[in-house]
Length: 311
Image (cartoon, rainbow, N blue to C red; front, side, top):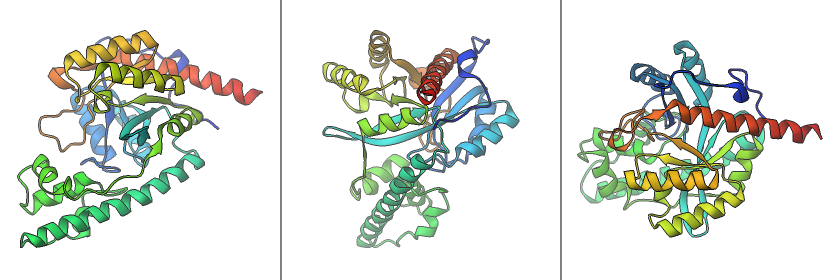
């Protein structure tokens, strides 16, 4: 099954304003972001963005709410998700899925399973953080305090905000370094080949998020992306806040060489110092041409699925 898009036709879409700006990677409080989907759309409107992708971690709960708000503000919402996957010995690799059918029952069941494991993990992290606080002679943080910052499930950034509220840390980075990293509990991950197949099955495009977090060695990263491309990877997030300008240029050339889609996004959570929606490292902005290319590929994917189901 694939999602029958009614907001636009991917194969005929063009954005005529060459100065239009977008952001294809933002997070809401349905995963580990600080703001609700409606608040993100409002911020996108105030920032002058014409399209955004809500790409929450292992959750699609904010897409419909964002879409309604986006329609009211004439901002397009691209259905998206960010999955935590494993590739060989690399864990916590992030895979973006764009243009997915976020209503597919099988996909939602899989996300529900990951959500349950994630909630248990984060509650275990909070327990460890509280034990560390008690060892320091400090008062523990109640689960209800953390839940006040979250909606779909708590994440480590929500625990960090609670630590800040209690004046146990001076910044989000300080909270991670002093409490969340030492008290971490391992995640559960999708095998990346299965995750790529699932994204493609529900009509989406699989894009490797911030590739240099997998490896900064160019030869190794090139080999990784070549192998993932053979598995069905559709694109790489060239423009991102975790890569240096020279690394983004390397990724851009590699994407063009391999015929992979080029995307870009801020990875905005609303808690990072100095990070803005719609803006990347060094003031890089994400232009509408990225969205036009994305939608062209999505149109092609839809056509492929139509042909497949017509057989």
